Image 1 (cartoon, helix red, strand yellow):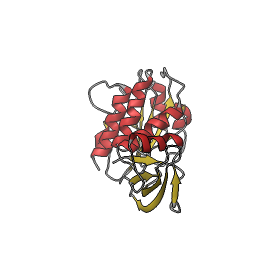
Image 2: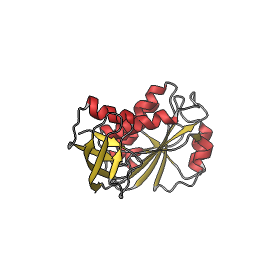
Image 3: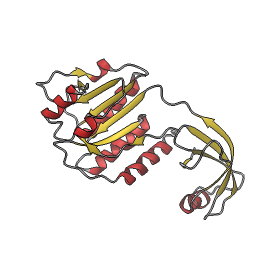
Length: 235
């Protein structure tokens, strides 16, 4: 099934007109005809069943026939992850985390970060593409990038807040031992050089729990996916 996305859809929508790029894709690539059915989403929990009433390659128009509300995942996952030096690795994380199931992603700049500038528009496109490919009605939210210190002192409402690191001199519990089904979780993953010791202590002072993701030293994007899957697996 091909899923299309628009943030302009809502429960009162009766007609929808695709932009020129999507219209061309529908009529020229997918070769959809008048009367064919398309599936759309608003990214905030609804699927829209629509029928094509004009397949003009410059302005395809559909009639909304049915709206189905999709229940969100039974848990909530927020991940704060330091962007990797090689941008494609962080983009891989965004894609796979979206496919697995995640609600919010916050890029953070840490003491050992080598990448401090991102392109949020590109990241949004990757998230939306992955959400459409995996047929999600709820799209993850990409938060603005911020420093570790800014993020750690914010008022986070998640039930469980964790910082994953590799510092052996600071006691760590396995992440899997702290997770509970149908709860809200916040997990922080550091850059290639890991979180600094002052950052770890600051997190602990602000109510975060020190956790391990196993005995192997993992790349940032791998660690983030391991954490994402661990939360999904226990539900």
